[in-house]
Length: 392
Picture 1 (cartoon, helix red, strand yellow):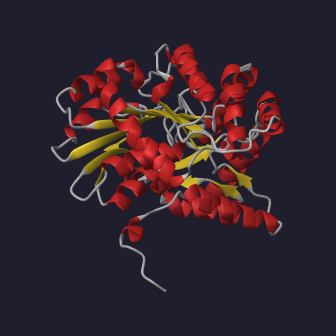
Picture 2 (picture 1 turned 90 degrees about the vertical axis):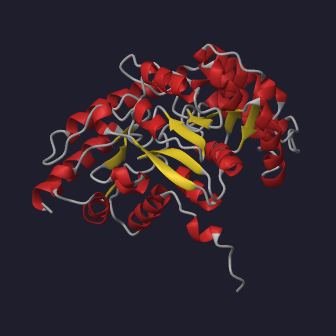
């Protein structure tokens, strides 16, 4: 067997899928498993979106599309950004991609190479670090701290930038913590970036529609002073319960758009045509299903936080965004990954250990409340019984 190039020894993975596979195997063996691990809405895609895809197929949309996506969908993305975020974006700067990860992949490939440094949130989405290491660049973690409400610190982030820094990755609302960074902190970061013109920014805003308690999402697209080096990441997976459709989009500055287009041509050619027409229906159609989903997530959010704070050795701040809780389990005496494994194997509860999201994730678990309130209540009851019986 020929040897792989060394870069493949450095590539990681998203452990949530490994936990999902194990939870599925246990369920198939007859175990009652409650999955609070995977980050996908448990609601179906809105019916009008499904119907738009069916109509597209019946209307003959079976062929290739432009690598950058069909113009009507890019125009719909522009309208959505203007409507939600009050920012004007040209459809010519929008690229349609098969899921949010593709934008990360492209951006990190563009700026990652041996000798370069890329800053990324920690705890954060594991693919950030995986792809940085794959390119040979040095990953530099930005600590995301509970004492800051799991918002990034502008001062701490700017202090990590060196002459070798090529890209800074930001994520708010955040996976895995549910943290939302306030506007004042973003203002300070953007002001500080003026002194680092060589640094590009990737803003992962895939959870941008998912905030609570009157919290507003503040997009980095709203800062004209960095638009010439800002890559914006978004998509349909979370907002419209379309994880399996693989539909994402990004906004690129003009100097990078052609490079992104060439990467698209060389990798996936184009996004599934019917899915793109469904995306137009999602963005331009009624948003009632989104509002209903968010109301249900809000109800579950309060349920899970209240329940976690009743558990022995566990504390949990209230997340302001996304659909994750990130409880502090240091008081249990357990290491996070060991506790996550024991909860799955012995109590039938799938969670993700904090270290799967970075070195600063030790002492925490991620729980997704994209599951029914009834299942969340059952899971919390099991966790309480487990922790009462099994002190580390």
